[in-house]
Length: 185
Image (cartoon, rainbow, N blue to C red; front, top):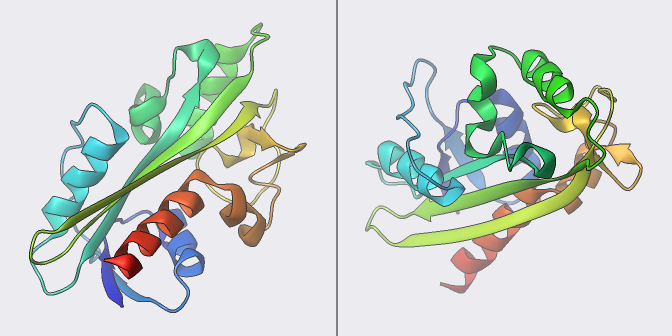
C-alpha cells in the first residue's frame, strides 16, 4: 500500500522509512506550509494535519506526538515541537532540564497519535505511549527531539539503535497499530 505521510520533519521521515517496511510513501513537498496545530489533544492535531494534506489519490497518515513530564504538569505535551518559543531541539532540551532542576520526580512519557484518512474519508486512529524518565543531562547522539533526555531501561532513546527505539517507542507502537487496522479493514 502507498501513503502520503503528512510531515516535513526529517527525523520523523527517517523513522517512517523503518516503521513501514513493505509500504511505499511520499512526503509533503519542500515549502509545504503546515496547518496551525490548534487542537487540544495529540489526536486532534494529527487529524488536523491529515485533513490538511488530504486531496489526492493516496491515503494520508499524520501523527502528533510529544513528551509529557509529570513534574511539569504534563508539559511540554502537545506543545513539544514549539515549547518555550525555542527554535532548536537543543534549546528545548536545555529548557526542560532547567525546569527539572531540583525535582525528584523524573517520570515522563512520550505519547503519539497516528491518524490515517483515506481519499473516500474513512478514518483510522491509533494511539500509544512509552513510559520512561528524564535524565539530568543529555545523552546519546541518535534520534531527534527530546530523545537525549528520555531514559528507558538505563539508556536514552538517543543511545538506542533505530530498531531498538522503534520496538519500544510511542511512534513505533502507534504506527504498527494503525497499519494493523488498515490491513484488517
